[in-house]
Amino acid sequence: PLLPNRREDVRTAKMARRSPLLLLVALLVAVDAQSPYPDDGPVVALDDASFEELVGENGREAWVIAFHTDGCAPCAQMAPTFIRAAKAMDGIVRFGHVHVGEGTTLVAKAAGLTKVPTVLGFPAHKTINPYMKTSAKQGVEFRGATGSHKKIADFAAALLPDAFVRR
Image (cartoon, rainbow, N blue to C red; front, side, top):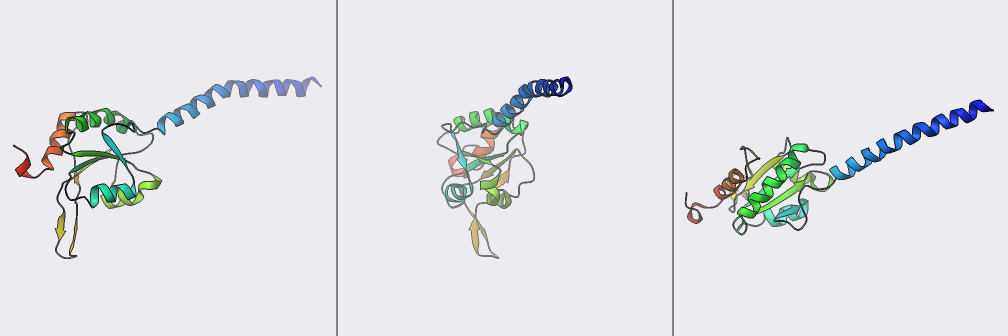
């Protein structure tokens, strides 16, 4: 009779030791699942439908889009810098972010994403494909350091027509 009780006590003690660990893991997963961009900030959240409507079909506004995913440390580190660049270019160039996941598979495929974080710029004008007789915005990848909001803002300004920007 002592042996089963002892086993139960050992099992209970092991579960008690694991509970804080399980709670910590669950908390980390919940924190990672949150977007690094605030809902009410200058960076607009985009999905497949809103991306096509706001970025693809809009021929008057230039956009800079950050693509990120859950659990990506570089994505989280880039977010504050991207937000500062969006504030610096407020009213001149629009900024958005796409959480690469279930609701954004079409955007990710169309953009040709191979890694995250990726920053793409979409100029205000559409490019005409003479062979297919279609027009679409062509994304330009930002290849600079994502730690500098000034470089991201300069990249955004380069998307504007020369008539609007003194270089």
